[in-house]
Image (tube, rainbow, N blue to C red):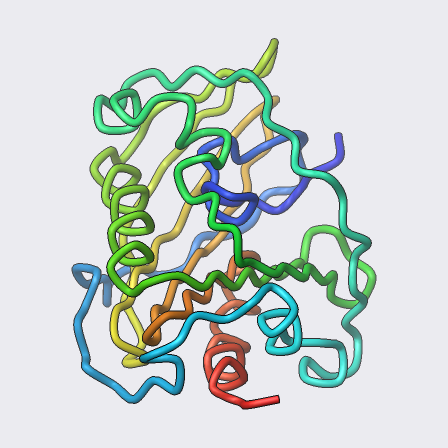
Length: 230
């Protein structure tokens, strides 16, 4: 079955993590895991103004930023399937909005997804959102905190049952607030691992999701580009 990159709500932040399956992926060492979010008080070029979707789009990473071997995937419409969460009270309390993306449905947003070396098992996606710092922090924090409150749970979408696992991971010293976690999901006898890291710098939220190595490799650059005036 085809596998799409696991993402949280809002396409990159959704509890519905799986529409298909891929080969098994070895999880990252979590010995350095730390609590999130962290408040660093770092510099942020967007501290006093929100940005339009067009302005955010200019701040997305592109193939020239990522380097050789990356291909941008065509954008597809978000799919909001009927989802049931079992075994995680915090997520159940959030309801279907958290599963379908409505919880973080900011008007100002931009997204790009890439495959590496033509392989659907090595993907990275970036999403940018702009709103007040308080709204960004509260909404992303609510979803991340709910997910990491449950080390394991199940998601049912149609006839597909997905076994989920969530664990906090170490957070890089970037921006004003940071959240990071590693998700494992299993369905149909297949298992995959996806990392998601969110960084808020002032009034811009950056979410990078995908293969753990690719997220780690490009997170700094993604955050730095949001501070570039166009």
